[in-house]
Length: 442
Image (tube, rainbow, N blue to C red; front, side, top):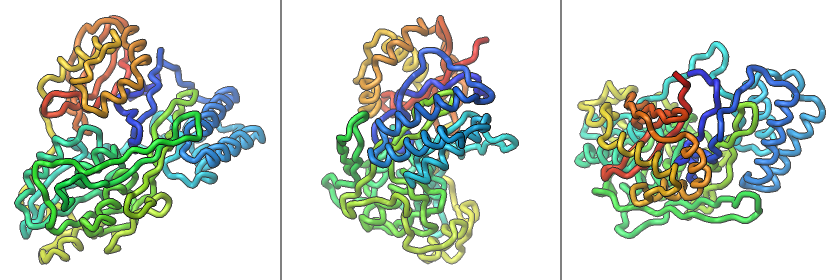
């Protein structure tokens, strides 16, 4: 993919509290990204980053300190000569983290490092890459992310594992996601029929030093896996929402953790544009577990059984009495019972057309959106109406593929431009998640 224009930020990914969400600031027109940065570009980036830190960073005093640090560095000429966007982004990230000690806080430049191919993400459906029945009637499920609206794939995977005697949940490659989706998977293992308080996010109200709290409770699942042995596999790559799942399961005494201490990122936030094509992930909240009163920020989640991540599956199986315990999943799998979807969901084209028309009018049908999607749409309706009304009527909708994350990808041509949609629908046809990118002209 060429990064000739800026990405139109996906409006549904801006859900407050999301570990991997985005602060929606859809562009009114494509922004040209310079191949190299001059002094004016660097100044604009520093000024935008400082403003964002002061207005949105979860700890206002730390945000101000970090802002002053990069302003001072710019004034001292420390950034002179950093004309490559990636090198400048990396230096800003280092300077910001030196103050904030926050692994979520980062500045990003488009594209991959020169000479380094971008790693292909594992193919998943609702964050689930696979589910298997292993030797000894042990279930296995790998979850690499917690996207919004992921309940249906999780339900299908868990249903295939319902009759197993024990379960291994592998989050060694999990980079995060929605706290709502984290809480839903945890719900399979809670022992109470009543809602259980799983986690709380304390988020800063932008531009102020006031905060609001959002509590997450267990939900009703198709069946309960409570009472059976559960092991959670972790690694140093387990981060953010993946860490929350491991932390919740551990402190609620629902599972035993096997593997490595996780990455240590507990401050959720979103991505905001800066200038010259650079963006910044700005943490605007913090997690607060109702049992511990704290979280895993900076220290990670410490496993109950510390082993290398490569040996975590083998050790977990040995603790379950499986003698032929292998390091790799394929060596111990008796049958694979769930895989990512390969065919598009019905109703996708109609949903894209309908939502495009509704947003252009500024009249979305909230009943056909999930609650999270509806909340984000309300927050951003003014910007969305401007964007879609400028695009004009839909001319064509073409299905492309089921993407690596499990969403259906469509190329949509409008009278005045084009967008690449990636969408996920619930089993009852509601829009749960979507992403938008500009299409190049043909």
